[in-house]
Length: 302
Image (cartoon, rainbow, N blue to C red; front, side, top):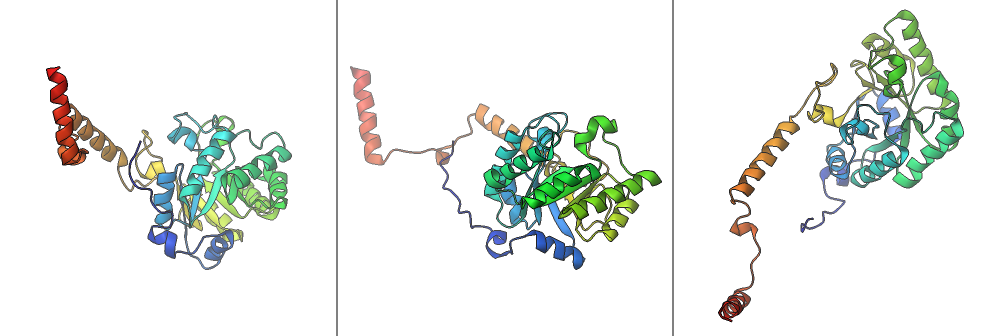
């Protein structure tokens, strides 16, 4: 419950003065060697703060399964849950390009089902692109989505939805054969129509070569600085994941300590009755207060 006044959707410097980010703008950034910034977001408040900080790409990642819903992996999150969170983020994003992760089992049965689910993200949730994991095995899917006017972001390397097949969260592409397979996957996805490519958990040298060979931008996460852009899970950089960070994570703030401290101070103030104070309370007008007090005295006498 809140009695605060609603805030205008147009407040914030980024919302009022920055150019809306589109896929052609991101592709132009690659051509001009301008790094692309990307972050995940999962709710209105965080999405708004991220967007007002002039991030280029906001991804509603299936990582929400872990950081928002408490699951141990990304696999349990459903299409309906992803659509719900994406709709919330859409309300907070004005400037950035908004993309959504296709969750596990939403495109794995056949391409037609994948296109139907991708259309839900665009039509129901306002996403401007969808992200799918996989390489050459996703070529038909990417082509079908592209034909349906859905911009597709590819994702190769460490693909969390392949957790069981990979035997855990392991760096991919470490052997010559594996590196060449990643290069082949990247080329195939670009040829199929992918507009961007996420490279996760791959050696820096492999990511650099893929970035040099592709015309579309690469977005790295644990893939070194030569990628055209970088993405992190917002909760990782804020220390809100309750787990040791991965090697590639740089923490920029300790929100966990900030929140704990605020909540502990609130609890202490409540238990000592120092909150709320008189200045945080509402009062009757003086005339009504006097009448109310008089009526109370009369009731006590009766």
